[in-house]
Length: 228
Image (tube, rainbow, N blue to C red; front, side, top):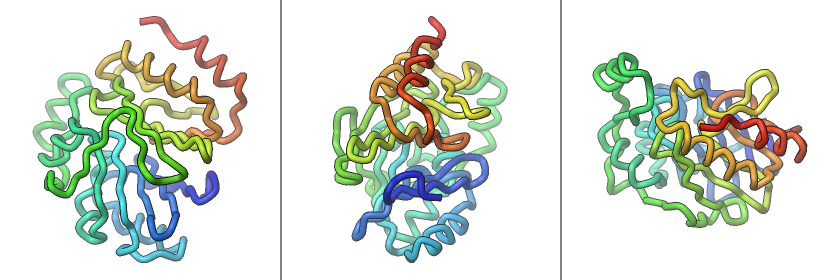
């Protein structure tokens, strides 16, 4: 589904994946759970592109449901992976960041590894960088849900890729759930930073992308954010 000019959304089952089509660049934001590469390549095919035309993969954070298919996609396409420094370290070990309740985190750390990507195949971005996609894609450090979390904003299109910093439920924009948040104070601060951008489209990692919110909706959400 096209959510903005040249920006497409795929519900990959478990999390969302986004594709920006700007030939010669085709850019993927996050990769879903493991074994989703076929669904993603099928989606690219519906857009008229072969797997080898995928040129870049941007990572919001190293949770398995966002990078589970990263290694397979990169190997099949040769795409350049982009991630923050902390996420790159985790991805190179096939390890998710720590932000879950202790017992759940132990299960994830012990039994739920995903395919690793060698660090020499990962380019590192940092807060304040601008990537050459969608008219200049701003890189924003948005820790909270996880400490390695980044978001991406395209002022030219109004699209904000928020990963798990925000989500939608029942048609409403919400903060990352507290029980799976590494740092609640940082999560609130990150949400404020994102909402102040007044994006036209909030491309979240979970839930339907928000395309019909108004500036008043964002202001009301800002005012409703819990104190920590």
